[in-house]
Length: 153
Image 1: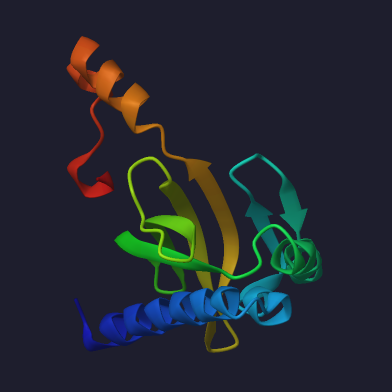
Image 2 (image 1 turned 90 degrees about the vertical axis):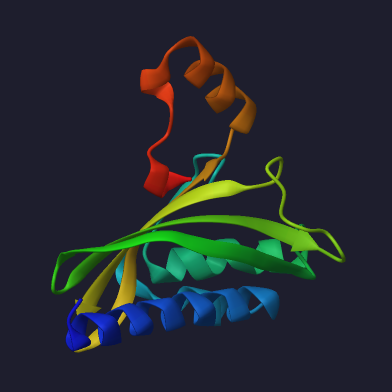
């Protein structure tokens, strides 16, 4: 890994930290600020929001009601540069409240695309998927070709 690539990776990791901190403070505008103006955001229930403004608006009601006082707990499982200005990030995470901890039952899997725009890294796309650990285990037992990649675990 080159020094420049390490610097870019650190910038992307910091961007995701900034996003999590905004969530933890219930700040929809700051949460959406890490996205490009035309970003795509797909929730784990399948809702698709197009653009930074729509992402912010959709999170306002969540932070005011259903997800008030929650925090993100996540980890990057893979960060890979597709080009010098585009990276794909795979991660695991959960939305937690109070003393809750992330478990295999509340974990979701995310795919995020980061792009460099005007010398700054931003998120261009996000997909959040419920992790069905039991189905994954059963499928892998019946057919080893269904086992997840080592880097995806």
